[in-house]
Image (cartoon, rainbow, N blue to C red; front, side, top):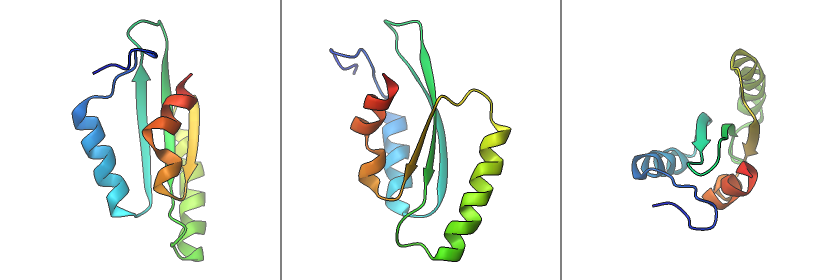
Length: 98
């Protein structure tokens, strides 16, 4: 169901998958696109998830892999780097989409 103020909606399957990824608390890359039906624009997000609880070496490997991976992608308009689930909540994503 779309938010009346923004006109944005998130498909239930997308929400479920997002919550599953957050619950695993492991390094992940998430790339997704937000389209607004009442506007002729969309945003492609790149979310880099690296929990604070990760080991330093793992974080370093992840950071270098992330940069290389991101360079291979075209059209990313918004990047989020999250170390805690609250940093990639739906409210944060919606605020960055505008």
